[in-house]
Length: 180
Image (cartoon, rainbow, N blue to C red; front, side, top):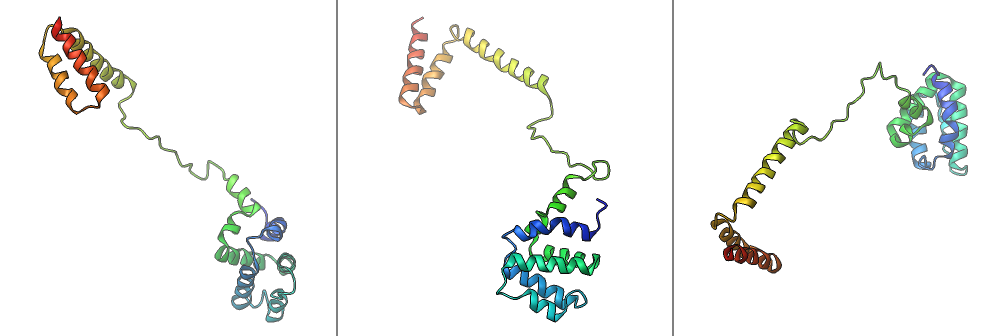
């Protein structure tokens, strides 16, 4: 983005005036930081003017932004630093920050690949092979059970730990197998 910091602050001014997250206390913190650390940007007299509680917060924000835009790019840059330090959620939701984040060139910034959640990396052929083996064993068990009577007795013993309905079905199946 080729905008200067002054132009970015001009674009963000309407958002900052309307945002309710930038309350009186946070605005005072920003003003005090600009006053104490950079007195050339905001003198004591100007800081007192912008900290006047008789004036609404949105008006004070507007006056402060207008004042900082008159001071130049360095003052605007320091305001952004103070905003980032004290009110990070507002800083990252500024329209210029959102545009900057959305307009990142995919060639200069490597894209983060979303990883697929894969249980195994063997693929569908392996799954079909395992499924076929399981179906084959089930069919073999089903058709060879009439010849082997131990299978139906095993079902009768397995029914001991089950609920009443399942137990009745397995016992019925066992008794039917013995009658044949």
